[in-house]
Structures are given as C-alpha cells and as structure tokens.
Length: 285
Image (cartoon, rainbow, N blue to C red):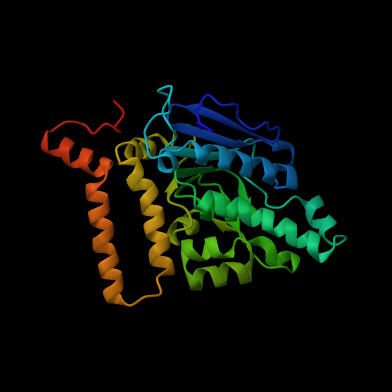
C-alpha cells in the first residue's frame, strides 16, 4: 500500500527539476540551450513530476502532513532556466511529425494534452514565473496556471498559425483564461503580445521587474487560505463550466456544497479559529 510520503524518491529527471521547500514545490524547466522547448522527454518528465506532486498534495490526501509529519504540498511554482520561459514545441519534434503515422501523431497530441490537463487540474495552487518568450505550448502552460508573474520584457504568442497549424490542444485552456473573442483574435494573428497587453486581457496576473522572490506575497496569501478550499475551488469552477442543469438545480447543488464544506474538518477548524481569535491549523507562522 502506497503511503505517498514526501520523503519518497522523486521521479528521475534530466530536463527539469523539482525542489521542495516545506509545502512549496519548485518545478523548473532546464533545457536552457533550446529555450526550454517542449520535446517528448521533457513533456514526459513534467507529467511525472506533476503526478508525483499531485499525489502528495493536501488537496489529494485531505490532510496537512504525511505519516512522518512532513507537510504535504500546497503550492507549485513553475519557471524556466535561462533567457526564455518556454519557446513552445521543439522544432525537431515538429519536423518529425511529418514522417509519423496518424496514430503516432495522435499519441504525441494526447501526451501534450495530458501535460496541460495535469497542470490545469492540479490540486495545488500553481504559480508561473515567465521571462523572455512563451510561445505556442509555452503560452499553453501559462493558460493552465492559477497566477502568472511576468517580466515586463516578456512576449507571449499563440504562434501555431505562423506554421499553418492551430493552437487546438492548448485551445481549451487559453479559451477559459481569456474568453472567446480574445482567443480567436490571438490564434488568428499568431503574433507576439507584450506583457502589458497580456495583463490587460487576463492572460497573466502580475508584472515584476525582477522575478526573484516575486511570488512570495502570493504564496503567503495562499498559505493563509484553507488548502482544501483551494483544491475544491478548482472543482467548483469546473462544475460551473460544465453545468448542464437548470438554475434551480444549480442553486440546490451550491447549497449542498456549502453545507458539505461547513461541516468538513477544515471548515470546522476555520470557523473555530475565527471565533477563538487564533490562526487556523493550516496557517504557517
């Protein structure tokens, strides 16, 4: 039986790394020589680290600490080494696609979709730190994150159209992030937008001259929030996105969900700490 301990061996990787600092995980892309372009090995490694961290998150395990008392994860910070965050799909992978069978290309697309969905649905609060360019799949990574901090010189593009293809795999995530009209415009133009425009349309959330430590205030805010409430907020959003019932059914569902959360261990701890004027047990001192 798996215990999902924080001390368990992490997946072996060579193109990205994972460092833990208490409840915070730092996942770093490390193909600096090719601007952290996404090839099959890197995509596979990122997925393995996202799976490992998901299994050891508070949202997945439902408790703050593992059996040895080590804190389960609550925040993931994604960044890239070097000059650029992520230049999108590796050009060699794109070139090889022309020689592959439809089945092989479909498998590649499924792997890429698993990457984005694993990041989008991760129970931790996810933060991105973006410098240089984020093109194609790099923009897809941005769209899947909960909070994105960019250097003012950053440039972002749904660049697939410049190659005569579409941002289809990243499309659902960018669409949810910026809405129908902006997604359509960005995918048709396929050009680079600057950080100010990305902030204006809601693709990113924060500009910072220096990315060093720029995430600290966001992390502090997240760590003061109930960790199960963070994970459940993602599920709540997905429920609203996919709701097919009528308004009355939705109102009933929200009442049931509210009652469930108020009666949960975290909900009871939050209410008790407020009434007793003390920090809740999830708030780090």
